[in-house]
Amino acid sequence: MNAPFCVLTIAGSDSGGGAGIQSDQRTIRAMGGHALTAVTAVTAQDTRRILAWKPVPDTLIRAQVESAMGGFAVAAVKTGLLPGPGAVRAVAAALRRFPPVPLVIDPVLSSSSGTRFLSDAGVRALRTALVPLASLVTPNWDEASALTGLQIRTHAQAKAAAVRLAADCGRPFLVKGGHGFGRFCRDCLALPGGSAVWYECARIATVNTHGTGCVLSAAIACWLGRGAGLADSVRLAHAFLQRALVRGRGLDWGEGHGPAFYGAR
Image (cartoon, rainbow, N blue to C red; front, side, top):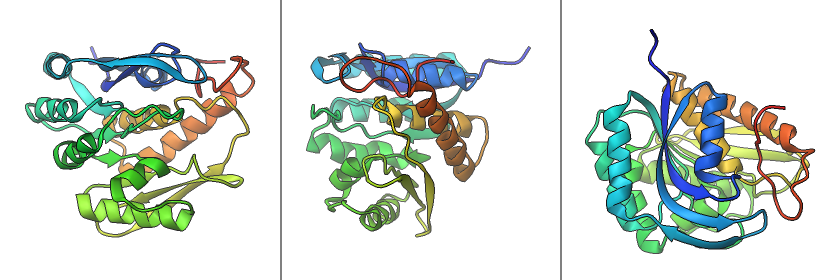
């Protein structure tokens, strides 16, 4: 009998189900996997804003990660919201106890509505403790700017940030262009050796974009866990996200931004 394909997501809980753990679970399941979870924070949010949130204690985050890694054959790991430097170090320490598997870091520093999750000290911990373990880090323009100190307002600046991050950290970085402009969404994948490649797709006209970063990073983790190379994993995850955005385009969630992906239609 074949062993289940397990992917561990370490992220916050979204009470609206649009992002975080809930989005990752849907994505992993759609990719044929079984989602293991380590909840890092609990949020109260709707389609417009985060009303309240509370971090999970660092010791409990570490215990969740260790129980998942020790009790299941984990093929890949994805991280999202990490609510402080202690949480970052707890996750890194837990992962170091086990043989390495592909790790995708989605550095969720704040919500799109402006709620800050990770302090400057947390960003430093992310770079020094967790990023060295990563197979890929997937910041958006704002997150890449916070990680580098560079202003990012153009695609050329996004590429410069991706190349610098990859060189400084010695790990691949995918700087996502969803917060950019124009008819096309352009993401830049930079490798530590200095090479960079663009992934371009038509921008989908929809307000249902909540959780796009979660969907993309979880899908990349799944493909890496299945043994695909990095470039193919990014390409295939991009195609999955495109389909998800098209699938959710006609859904009416009321005010605000609905989920980018909501099951099969």
